[in-house]
Length: 256
Image 1: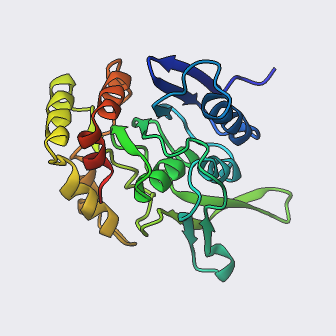
Image 2: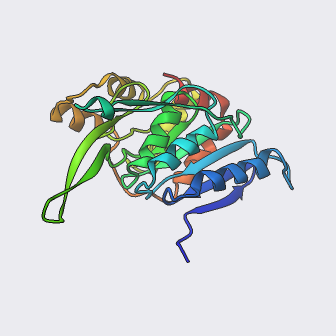
């Protein structure tokens, strides 16, 4: 039996969806869960949603694109760029918002990578979700296997993945609008500032979105040090729920 990679839970009026990897049916499971929660609820429909991608190392790229299609009805999902013309591609959202516009928070940590970073960057850059946690891993290369005459294989980096706004995922990773890796007190102060309309990560996020290849190592270090990568902590979910419960804090966290 394949490992379970998708789980749902409720925390009050918040729907919590945990995705540990992007398997071949992740998008279908997400779509079914959203339809059950918002179109055919057995209980009062959730007021908001937490997408927990902590520890998610990625998986199928196509499933990441389809997951975003369950939430975004328009906008760029991701871009790829490389030396060969075939390596350059743009994915556009082509679905419908099954959440019916509910506020969304995405939980990430230092182990969140690859396809999980694509989903996070897509929803964040399009202003559709607030990101809570730490800097992610920064795994943003697409690799291909080239067969060799001796029946071996050579792994080549084919293209780099770019977020909708054009910044590279490789090495930079995704940065949160609410940082929790600096401790509980830091997260509390961050929530207080967001509720007052002040984005503590705002300047750093603007710098990140302006980054273009090649990004200097010193710039990568400076950006990621604002919220260092770390494993998710117990209070992350509550921080996300608190953020979702405050409309002003959420507006500030999703503003660009």
